[in-house]
Length: 171
Image 1: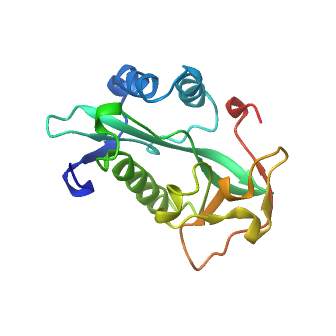
Image 2: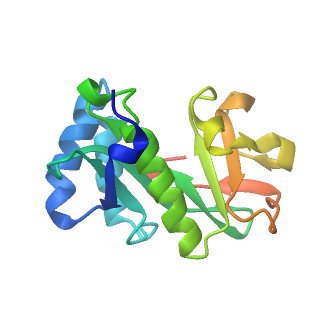
Image 3: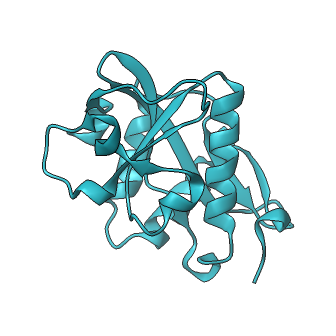
């Protein structure tokens, strides 16, 4: 098993697009997540430099994480789109490496907040907390523990408000 420190992380390039699609298709049961990633690339919510891959020692991408624009009320924030890792590399740290690189890139770009709909046992280790505890909500049904948010800069507490996702999310 590899640790995060052994993964190469870098911004996704145009040459990675077909490989990332293969990774997402392999990681999920249906092509919906791959279609979402493709749609987010084509949407105005796309932010260059916030789509990261984790690659093996040969430079071949095996994991992918994407942050895209959303809003908490009127405050700009980011949303973590589906994170994917090739099935044979899952639980190896490739997904964690991609997420950590994406969060570091977002912080370096001056972004302050990230939201996520995801598995509560996985994301809290990155510092995500229940969004509802900060007055953040959504306009659709989701279990409270699956809606999380993170302030990238502790000097700026999470704002309150309803999350507005990018159009490709369809919510």
